[in-house]
Image (cartoon, rainbow, N blue to C red; front, side):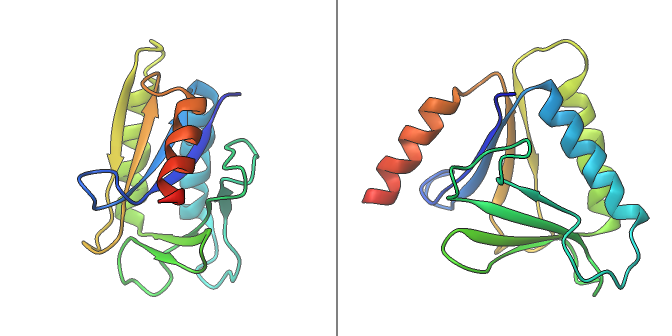
Length: 149
């Protein structure tokens, strides 16, 4: 599998964004795990899944995103926990929207494309899921260059 996540502070004209480079398997993994958010006990205290730990999306330890349901009903948002760790809290409405967008990106055709998984909180970074548009090595090089400046 060739999937990678990185946070680029300069992406989108300096607004910053998460870029998730995926293949079909990673798209289906994301969809499956977002759907699991709907079935979880609202009092569960642990993340439902983690993006960036290499299972199956890698980050070289530079970007770990813990995904959990919106238990407090504050809407979808991403909060930075440390230099390399983030919490992504996802509302029920966002789950449905994300799964639809990811299924459209998968589509069974293998064509290149991307989708924006936006948050309800305008201060949260955008998440861009991209298939066939970026090479993982290019993303690694770009992020390493940007983090050195």
